[in-house]
Each structure stands twice: as C-alpha cells, then as structure tokens.
Length: 229
Image (tube, rainbow, N blue to C red; front, side, top):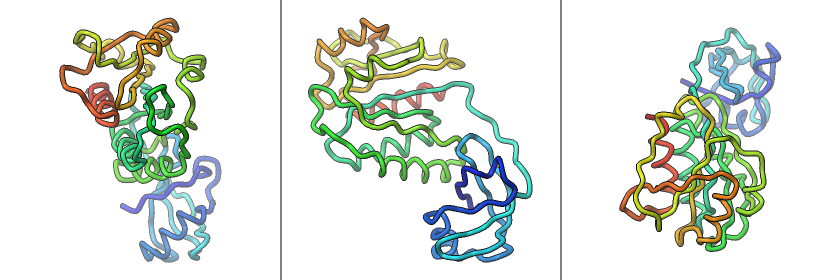
C-alpha cells in the first residue's frame, strides 16, 4: 500500500505532492504515470488516487475517492522532557504516533540535559509513523518550550504529571477515554519539587507509573499505551 501525504487532497481533485514526497514516489518507489496510490491529508482522511505526471521534484495526482477511516475517540497530548540524545526523542515520537497520540510538546525542565531543540526530525518521524501505522491524522508537533511557559498555555481539563517520588497511584484512564487529556513526562532526573508544585497549582494531578524507574521516552510510551486501552 503506497501512502503519501498531501494536505490539499481534501479540497482539490487534482493536486501535487511536495518535493520530498515526489522524490520518494519516483526515485525510491519507482512509481510512474497511471499507478494507483493512496493519499492522506493529515486530518484523518484517506483517498485513493492515480498519478497524472511523475517527476523527481513534482508528482501530480488525481483523487478518485475518499476512504472511510475511524478516528480515535480521544485526544492525548504528551508534553515530554527533551532527551539528551535526539534519537531517543525521535523513537518516542514514532511509537507515540503509532499509538494515536494527537499532540507532542518537547519541554525544557530544570534538570533537562538538552536546553534547545529543533523539531524538524520529530516531524519527519511523525510523518513516517503515520504512513507505517495507517494513522491518517498527523499529530501536532509543537516547538520546544520551557515548562513554566507550557504551564501558562491553554490546556484541557484532565491534566496529569508523572513523578517518581510520590507513592504509587493507579492511573484510572478508563474514565477519560473519550476526553481530552495532557500528561507531563519529566527528564531523567525527574521534575523538581518546585516544578511539581507549579503544575499542581494549575490543575495537574500527580500520578505514578509504578515502582520501576522508567526512562523518559519509555514513560511516554507507557502513558500512550495505557490510554489506547
């Protein structure tokens, strides 16, 4: 199943793939005029299409029909501390998208080993994961932001912060399956007590992921998998 991304698919019967997608179609997949492909618009819609013209830097397609795809009944936003190794955050992004996470925000905390971050590689990982998992709603990858600034943003009602130092508490996600929710995942050294207090002041509830000390990206995937259930 050859799947490509085109944001204009839902508004135009004839549209062009961008240069990156065109290169993959022509130079990697060796597709040609007349070949059938699938297009997703990043907003949950999938279409069948045919190639009208094929060049290394531009591929023009004609939309044939829209396919019916089910959307997840919830919106999960994970704000995760930027890891020292970029590869670990890319891996998290890939797996989180496969599990249906709707939004990812890299956050910079007091104990973060990485203090700045470019999200281009994360967006590329998210795109690849959408295609691989047939998850046709492209998640929002926000620019990295300090924890303090994130706490001041517009957030959903159901807010949780994971913290290793609190007594183990079972996460009852079943109550929020059809709700919007956001989880804060801290750095390897965990959140400071001051950061936890700041989060609680804006409505975050403390929660534990069990007795084991999880790596940052593992904790994020743990939350995504629990929510998926």
